View (cartoon, rainbow, N blue to C red):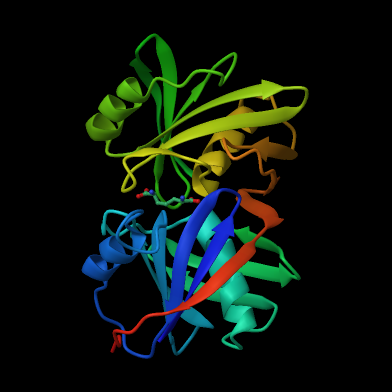
Length: 250
Ligand SMILES: N[C@@H](CCC[C@H](N)C(=O)O)C(=O)O
């Protein structure tokens, strides 16, 4: 069967669609392995749904399930349109809820489920953190510069709060973000829901307006916007290659 490799804002994914929904945790771990597999931050499997254009199953690189992935949602929308599974405007079901997405060439916008603030009073390592759910949980710390990111500290917080860890800094009306991701267990080149959580806190603290360019570690920009209580992510998606997997998936 054919599997597709995608890159979106710095996150990379293996994507395929199938008619039968079944757990693919082991396959995710195999395919995402950087040395022995294709290599990716996550696996996305699209399956039919009677009410929505499709339903997705999202797996992190270590095979764990995740309810949502912002950059993955944009890559999945591109894949679905390209394979005739949905029209340019689509709605699909994730573990976090229904996601709306719009494909315009290689520019894909997705609207996340409404953000929820879980805790605004976390003090750790001399920083004040907010725990925000943008589909998956993110700790957000605002810093002066993202030039350094203490991964040992991030790892400790990740296990203490079972969340992804982000630091963010505003400079020249642009938000710079670095994220340590659960399920990859390292800093990734980007994280859409993480950037959304950072933008949300920055907006609520009046350090950002209703829209902003956000730059992750990859340097690939994402445009974030807040309309009412919804957040949208807009940016480029790249279909990097297709590959044939000898093994059949049922
Ligand atoms: N990279 C994703 C987030 C993927 C899920 C995350 N690792 C988790 O387990 O919470 C994004 O772009 O949002």
